[in-house]
Length: 604
Image (cartoon, rainbow, N blue to C red; front, side):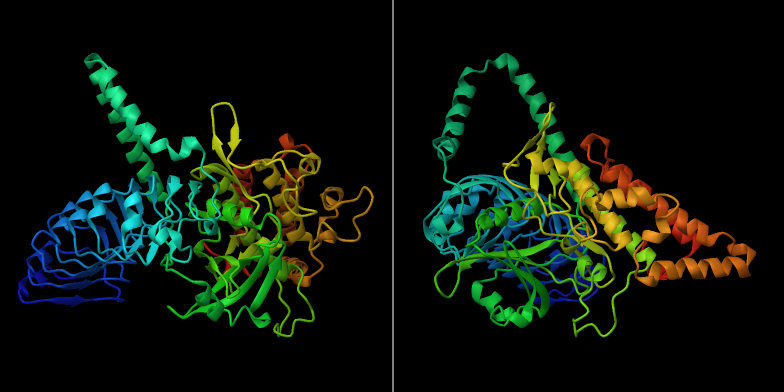
């Protein structure tokens, strides 16, 4: 930790402690170092609130970097005392509250980065005094309200407002006229702007919303009688209370995993990272684009770059849907977006890409159905029973979060093995939200924020039967897809296997085998059967392990029953993901108590 005695170094002008493992918080005594000009504490394990008053006497500070830590609480108002501040980077922390209005007093400020925090409220009007600002990063927060018009007049070379809750018309002057320098993706209520941003046109109501709102406030101030002032104070109290509770909830839901710094990436950056989008870097392709393995020169990080095929009908809508779905979600089993790029390629065509963390173990599809002609695989990939169990628990947990614990209900609509990626520790991450539907909860029903009744929602074999006759997207559709996925994981058979013809499908195939013939239909890959044989031999040799094979078989039967109950034809008869997740945890605990091959590879 940083010692309190640091305040005794009265002549200290540079404190650079970047990229260590420092813990604790910033000592209040640091405020005694009045000659301090540079304060770099980035990439540590520092946390807690930034002490009030620590910046009061540090008027000589010109550069502050505290990014990639765990600081929480608001950014102190005293930051406005830093008249010589040129750079402030507090990104990738857990700072909450509003952007301090006093920042407008930092007239020398050129670089301001507050990305990836939990900041709320509007972008302060006082920032219009920062006439020297060339970089402004406020992405991945919960900021609301309109984009200030004064930003058009700034000499900005980089502006990132993506993944917030901003609304209204996007300006077109200044930096807003260059789509390679401004990033506004992930704000579902924005409209207008230049054509390259691919935002919807503004209606008269949207473009005049700010003026009407101001006019309405004036009318209210004149008309509302003094007798209701008490009611207004009561209303304000409840609003502040709800906002505080919502902020705390989002803070507790924020993942504790290290976050990727939302850096700006141009087309050239991604072109270089993927060796010119070469075939050797291609790791997957789909209807809406291709995925490439890339190496970012900024920090030597390996990433996956999803390039949208904008010639494909609906690709732009897919890009927007994925940005909206991934904007605020935080869960260990969901593929987190690292950054996005909306630019122009070398031929002058529109270019859109999403950048994700690279998953070294590929997709679940590659493990269930390995390609035998893949020369890179020196040994065939095999999944043990406990590994399959872990993957199913991970996927179920992700769906439960999307359906019941997210800021708004999200229906994935395209759950299948190729959209489930495995990291180095074989943790499963659900990805590809290109078909996702977002819903807001009303007292009567769930209301979709997108059109959800046009076309098929999902992939053949995995989408629910009701989707085939025009049914709307629903959480029960995801439950059906999960049921089919579970049966595929346990049997090793795709729902599109050539054996499934006429009235026979994967659901009926599994249902007919329960309970007597379950062992006969499990994945023909020998791993699961091998575990049962070894368990049976142990039972014969040792009374302590008596019945292990029977208990393993019982767990498999319980699993198959879940898959069958999730994939019944009637949506209302399917299980809920809450119950599915709970039951899967119980089955996994039973397997761990029994002890199976691969149990040592499981996670807590």
